[in-house]
Amino acid sequence: MRIVIAEDLLLLRDGLIRILTDTGHEVLAAVDNGPDLERAVAEHRPDLSIVDVRLPPGFRDEGLRAALAIRAEHPGAAVLILSQYVERSYAVDLLADGDGAVGYLLKDRVTSLDDFLDAIDRVAAGGTAMDPEVVRQLFARNTRDRGVAALTVREREVLALVAEGLSNSAISAALSLAAVSVEKHITNILAKLDLPPDADSHRRVRAVLAYLNR
Amino acid sequence: MIGRAGRALGYLALGAPAAIVALAWTLVSSILLLLLAPTQLAPRALLGATAVSRALARFERWRLGWYSRRPVPVPYQPTAAGPVRVRAAAVFRDPATRRDAGWLAALFPLALPSMLLAVVPTALAAGLTTAPAWLWAVPNPNAPELVAPIVGTWPGRAAAAVLGLALAPLAARWVLTLARGQAGLARLLLRPDDRQQLTALAERLATTRARVVDAQAAELRRIERDLHDGAQARIVAAGMTLALADRKLRGRPDDPVRADVELARRQLDGALAELRHLVRGVHPPILTDRGLAAALGALIADSPLPVDLRVPDDTSVPPAVEAAAYFVVSEALTNAAKHAGAQRCEVTLAGTADGGLTVRVRDDGQGGADPDGAGLDGLRRRVEALDGILSVQSPAGGPTVLSAEFPCAS
Image (cartoon, rainbow over all chains, first blue to last red; front, side):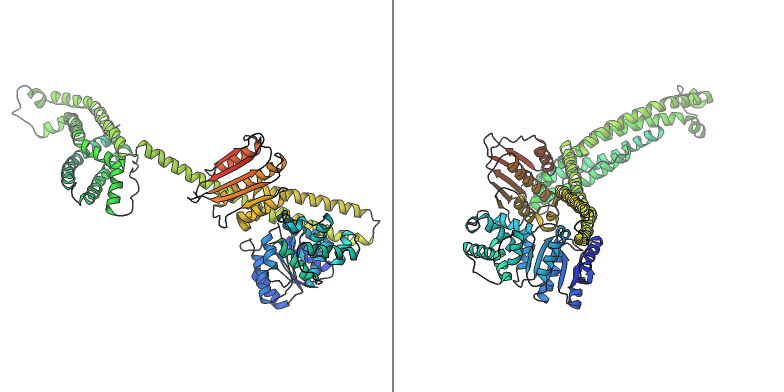
């Protein structure tokens, strides 16, 4: 996969480059600020951009804004945001255009290499990768929601993984469930949340996240 | 001694012309103001007269400062803006205006006699001391019989000089005493009164404290950034390296090194979690980056209790207040979940009419929180450093209400 990185801390930039090249990816450019990122993306047209939220000069959300600018310029350009902490509004901003191919992970996840590489693949393929912590916080907002309250424990587990952006087969692997029972769970969940049944998993993820984030 | 006495003499001597001007001005201005008082010109006349009085008082302050080598602080309240009537009223209310007038009125009866009382003995001592010189230069053959031996003979002239020299220190001491008396009275009336001085002191203390609080807040943010860019980044980088090593070992499931790598990864994860916790206690990064509402949102998402959060859209308060409000909520939620056995919480933030902020956290737990416990006490200090008030109501049986009130941005 051809990847562009924006990360201002040299240590982490080098670490990311090493991880990605070691696992067979190609890092086309590694920059440390938003404008350079936009230029690099325009020049290389990468399969994926991995962007730190907090970039100079303000160290607030310059990375996110650069990512949104890129997606406005190149609709559907795959972007994975790395953040030091969970901020729901980042996820909301990213999901806003509905084009998919977005991810939002905590920086620490990078050290869980398999999950990280899996998230990269998912985002580059047009899917979604939400950090489990983001999903947990979204659930916490909905403790009194009638639809969520009606879910069984198992259904909640499945819903969390759906919200993270996992495919049916990945969910069945993660929970050691048969593929058919995963599908059954999902059908039940969508019914209880009053969401339209949708075979397309990307659209399904967005619908679920939109529901949790109301 | 000679220098001080000289300055004292100068001070008293300068007092005489000042006294005459002051008397004249006191009379003229009193008559003028009395005559104009019933007319529409009264405010203007008061402002004009006060300007002249203040110029005279300024000279008096300078005279006093020069003598005592200690500048006299100016006591006037800052000039009010607005129409003449408002400004005149402000000037009239300023206690310094009346004190100035008092000093100018007292100057003539006080300073003129002082000057005479100082100059006569000084002149006498000086005259006697220098008697041999001028009696020799301007002989007086017609001197009365009584003083002729003193005036006409050298031993007599020498005796006069000795007498003058003996008188000089006495005269100097007398002059110093007179000057000290006048200066003491002058300082009493010309400097700001005690209340003004205390007010000024309080303002100065408030300013310096605000500066300390701001500096501390900035320092905490700097520490947070340093930890983020330094230690935290290093640990994550080391974690990446270990993750790669772990991946490379995957092909060799029996290699005992795998267990070590796995352990090292867990240890690093622990270090990172601890560091993250520390950073949040210092200054939560989300507060710097996204503001109070977002930081509180993350806080309640982390709370095991369902929390009802009400935050106004716009909480434009200084960073130090934001941080204090954040930690009030954080501590209250922790207590509610850990100690009070609460089922739910309400967090309400509201702006006050004068631009301040109130924070209120209510839980439905069993109450009985100790307001002087370590956590709440630390919180109280934090709030009070910003001129805020922290109150804890936690009767046995609950509910517990923790509220903090911050005044407008200082």
